[in-house]
Image (cartoon, rainbow, N blue to C red; front, side, top):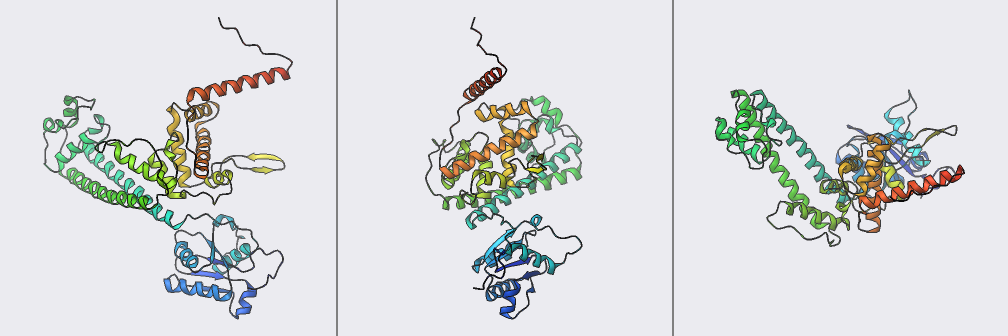
Length: 444
């Protein structure tokens, strides 16, 4: 092991790699390069053999830690190869580097990255374990498929409107039971008679059969029917891929169960809620706790949350570190002893987005969290109230995963009573400070 050359170096044997799409530039400390009799900066290709050569060179020189700039998805193969070779790899956010203007090149970038790393001025980004990354890839692929499927539904709606088939005016969900039956009868069977198509109306549809007949009376044009036919075919094809994703997720979750968590009695096998219950059970077995007990956190939100961070959050020193990583805690921008801003930082964190959607769903919830969200909305604008509620949800998730405790809702009534008692106590303290005394009004 090479000796430390400067007292202020925290990682004296650290290297820096500037990742690119066509080549990677690596810089090692000057004292290691001189001992090995090689140059301190080298360029490597992006092929697997080149990445193996990069790892061998770093190990031969004596590097033990590598700082890697997170550039697109180009860093992933480099990260995996170096990690498999036993090197400690730090994935660094590019915003931490602060390049000097007018002095930017691939060589200078990797040297600057190596310098900052050796001085301990960089922070490593968090990357989940390999088993979590596998689930994350499938969940993200499923989200992509859902987005594409929704876009083809919009194309079907557009084709119908262009023919003045106002199906959306009488049916809420075009791809529901009634909507699909009508569209498939139009595309597959070639039915054009509005009265025959209206017979597919489900008894729970509010619009009458006569209203549906009016909505299905339009101008049938061949070019729009062609678009409708292809859009329906794409919708069905994506549905098959979604089924494959669901089967893959089910298999992955079954292998990751750490404990059998009791989440209640299972619905009947022929019930629509049975599939959701089984997914909820698998997620609870993986996490060790049932996160869906938290108001606002449904199966979809919990699936996204666990697929992004996994059930182990010990990487974060405290709940404050966890919320800071999510970008949900207040900022601290202070200059001259004056708070300039306390807003949260901008972040594209997927867990943050999921928690904010969950917080928005609490608007009409008759729970303590719902009452908390509505109380904040009365004090501030809704975006800030949404962020504050998402922050509260994040803290609950962290404590449940670290302590293994089940969530128990105290109820809206008890929460409102606690807030009332706090308000009364605050009024009494304020009155006492002004020399007054508050006395309750006797009930009539």
